[in-house]
Length: 206
Image (cartoon, rainbow, N blue to C red; front, side, top):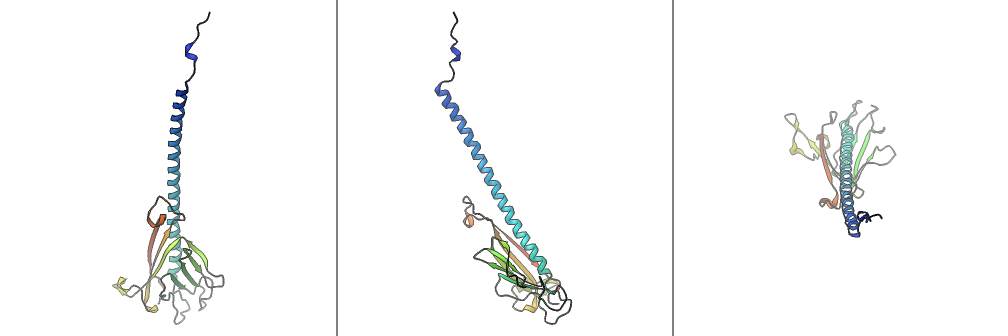
């Protein structure tokens, strides 16, 4: 006769339930960590995109502003950047082909902020109409400076009223993320980034 092996009875129902509970806790913890990390990466990606959008827009506008007033033919009365009382608009003129007019491509550029669409458009005024330039822009402000003090622009002379006195342009723009974050309380869940740059076009009002 053989003795019955009492150790082969297997797991009891209580042991199985405990093991399942522990497994569920581990899986839930891993899921929470994964979701947290995924959200963090998503937020970081949006922030990087937001900053890059602002920098790219500022860089392109800055390059074109620096060319304002280019007038190789010495056309009398040429105005590189006329004063505009609307701070969300800037006109840039440059006679790039030297023919005495600003009707050529990229010789008259207009940047305008549409607050309802949060978009800056760029219009080269050659028949194509305004084109989207930068998205998710909540603020776009153009400042005009005039006069100099000891070779530098006088900050007291902000928003020059006379076009012929403009010597420096100040651009400020605020970009926001594409999507709102419900866990981020300020600004209705949108993160924002503001850039400000000043430009002194070398050919302006020479």
